[in-house]
Length: 278
Image (cartoon, rainbow, N blue to C red; front, side):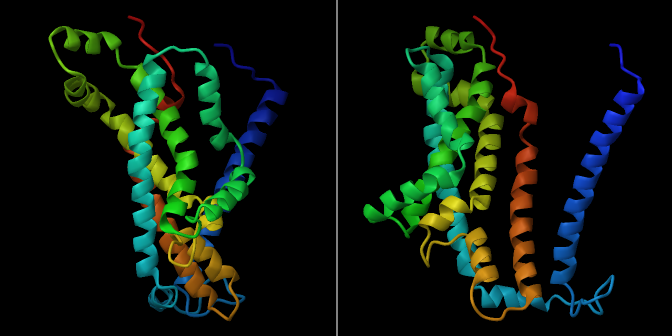
């Protein structure tokens, strides 16, 4: 491989690295500022706070009622994960193993909720859900989040399924294995890393999904990210430190699940679409 060592190439590489470093430093600075402020007794006009405390976390937990909010959040998230897993994995298997007229169009339709901004279809969908009587309720939030979650599972799982040689399934059927046995004893162990990756990433996406949840959530069906939005913009005087403490709780909750997901998935597997031909 011949590498260009000209001045223009060097300047271009330097510019790219400079932008990357600037972005990373800016991100670290924002996170550090929120974290430090959530632990500060008073922080005005100085490099570091005048004192440190954890009381803002206790006040945020009590003021914003984080216990019921977290319970509702994980009820919604895990419901979305289970339903999208059941529907998404079976649909991905059908798309990976079967060729039929309109297959490319079907995949394109599944791509649309991931490519189109959520607000574009979120507002009419929320209107429809409210007219159907489920808007502002638990199942309204679940249904709204399933719209991008199911296509995401399908698109993540298709490469994993395509990498499994179909001759393995055919051999099992020759020896008398039923469809259920083929799935439980052969496909499930092979697909488990991909399923865990897809479902954990759906969990993280649902935790972070603000637009669709905001449009369809009611007072008793708000997730943590929507509650954080109301804490910032609701009327009244609130300590900035308690809001930052709530933001740290949200950030840590999302980060834990994201790190866990990355233990099961190599990002290149999501875009790799190699298939072993029988």
